[in-house]
Image (cartoon, rainbow, N blue to C red):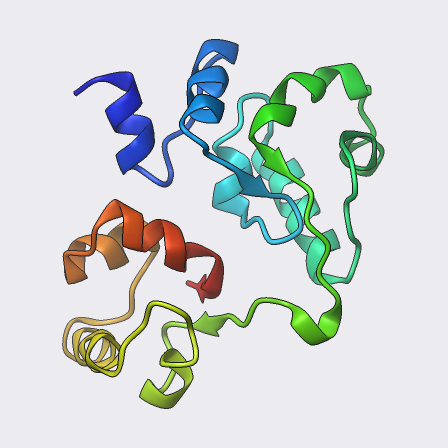
Length: 163
């Protein structure tokens, strides 16, 4: 499988170099910094688990990031260490009234699931059935594999789901 295919198919592919970041940007991969999960941040080279958790905690507390310099300040690091990641980072603004809805898959009802774009009543029923029969979903990859969802569908759903 080529690098381009791996990056396109795997929503959790961890980039290892500037070259891979450039390929991802070329493919249109974007990480919305104000909605990013720990796993999203860990895709980026040079971001530690501690830093990823810190950024997610700040976002959930209502801190909005508007630029690379905001990220650098939050991480207490020089902007030059993050600048080369800019091509895959998206700085979107969300006010509280229009924030993306998200659900915890281990507790969500069918009614809550169908509020998420891309989740049909049939898919919501399948999610609940799999969860009740086989146990909770541990992460996005486990969710994708158990339901046989495409990478494209997972890419559309990943910002709405909590594990």
